[in-house]
Image (cartoon, rainbow, N blue to C red; front, side, top):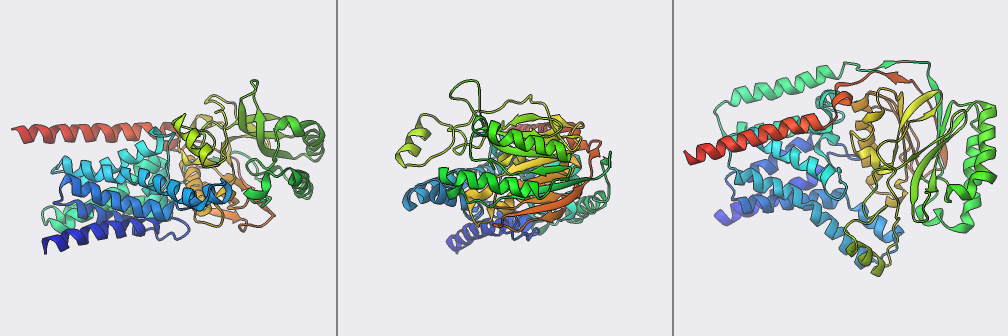
Length: 495
């Protein structure tokens, strides 16, 4: 019976990981996230540290396995690897990131704190932060907070960001375990969590930023050129003509945005015959065009993933937060040797640096992020309060018809709530969208369709509390509380 009980808890931890993934887009069953975490945290009760580690690992395997299976599509369909190699690499990828919930389980039991109701959430979020920022340039995917954009907890996002709100979510799940197992302070815990969720709902009614100008008419272009066709030389001219036509059809808009690397050629190769005439036309029609393409640096081996503006003002932003194994090769020379032998072709870009001037279009400065950069909450906060809106250009075509474009759009919505600004999100194959400061999607183009998306946005000014502080103060407070409680428990265990 003891074996069956242990086995069932292992199984439920594995099952909970799958349900946790269903809380995220495109499924968006938001309340499955606290339920799944409740089941996981409950499975750690009265377990050994090793058993808790195993259950955390099972949770991670199922959540990442179901949540980021699209890595296989990128490696196999567009990276050029055979099915076996792509499967193996995807498995390694999932197995690696599953170590983080495993570590959370081990620590939570190893410390055997009498204050697990708060220690488990602290450990979970601190490990999420470590996963999101500190290792391999960060992988902040499937963070607990992203699942809650439609729940009352979303009201805390402008105050404490994704990690602060994620703490309140995990605290709710942890408190639920205590309420179920322990009659002591049961009513107090229920009341506290009820107040947390109620206050979150009330906070959603607060508007933290204000309009600073007349609405801008914007157009986002979705070329829908699949990744396996995009860089073929014979398709380059047709690609340029497509974007040119879709742009010319919308002259008169204040801002037109093209998706990531919409131009499949280096800046120097298309500047004279294509970009300069386009710039002159943009000036004549009073339109600013935001275009993404690769650009060479001063040295021969320096290449940037860049965004430029054409029109009344010109400028360039160079992507700074690069995607590991996609835009640069960490763990060299091992990673380069492995990918070369598997015939997988990846980029080799140079980061643009932290201190870059803001681009301007439509008469206002904006914060630029390229693809993966919008997964990092404080990446663009240095541009506030000067920036009046956000622009994200993305190429989720690498991941085909999977859940990834929906997950990525959900992440982008978090950035608008944190900053209190509209976002223009232009993608190659989808999901192209215009997002309001409250995270609501006000316009969205259908996936895998060559089209334009027209909308109106309002330039916004002011700062949310989160925009002033970023993630670091919240994380620092959590770390201090964790260390104090851990030290106090260690002291009590000795005496």
